[in-house]
Image 1 (cartoon, helix red, strand yellow):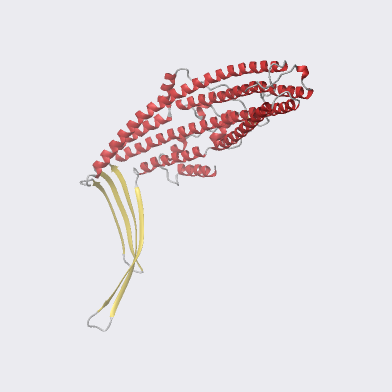
Image 2 (spheres, helix red, strand yellow):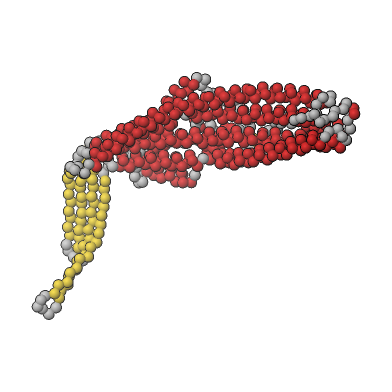
Length: 486
């Protein structure tokens, strides 16, 4: 900003009002660096936010329900290995009307019969097809559990981002508010000095333009803060209170290759596809078993009674039945080829996902290194800008600098502080992104004070397909009622 139009005088020659305004500007500029506010009574830490996000998330509730549905698929296939018993009953009215030819009239008759029966079927042997289908369902359960872990990572990482962005934008608003106050004081000083002829109209216009720009920046920062708060509410479940500065960064392996090895072994995306591949292999075997015979034990028991009459009968049967396909138009072969194609697709997906996870780990580490470098540079930038600002302020007291020079130096300090704030938030977000890329951003890994969801509890209750009247079935009913009240 040009200062060629300013005609400087000795400090003693300034008007007392203008000198007072300048001192006010310098004082406000010196106080522009925000200090930490006293800790609020209801302070909230990052761990508190993560706990709230874990307990609040409807996405976790949704996927827990999907996991319970997958558990029930195991129970459904297990049930096919048990006796299948059905009952039937009917009441039938039969009637007739006959006319003799030749003859004087007609005759009619009617009878009502009641029938009741029970049929039973027990699978004896099907070359392991049902057992294979049960194993497929179990692999699907394990894959769904890994999906739930992946969702948990997404929920917690979203909460980390929301927390840090609220902190970032809150501090941005404070910086912008300080900037507006400083420039407002500068504009008043410039107008006072213009009235006594010490500066030109250009200096006043420059200060006015700077103030308008500062107010625009403040409005933008306030809008960003409002959006960050809305995202926080959606991610965590409540409005942010006084957010504490996060503690030290989480422990992260310094070796990228060791982190990649951990991710390949433990990342939920990879583990899920591995279970999908295992399920696809078992599905091929089940398709082969479907081409072979099926042996069952069948039995029936029935009773027939004529209502209002004396007719009564009972009947029953028991036997072993073997059935098998002869020709089904090539459908069974097509089902096997389809299962093989799906197996190949899952293997290809495993290859893709494994490389993607390794790449994500490398990218996350690169982002973290860059964020740390930017944070270090921003700290140096703030120190240098503060030294420059103090120097310009002292030179202004001696008449060697204009008020706008002071404001320019103060603006550079504020910009440096804004970069520092943003860099600090980015380091935390990048660090937790590394944990997520390794598959270690879970409530258990972070040691959060929450009641973690046990994916095996419900499975253990239903894996044997209990009937409602059994002791385990009654326990399961109590669990379901508890889930409904949550």
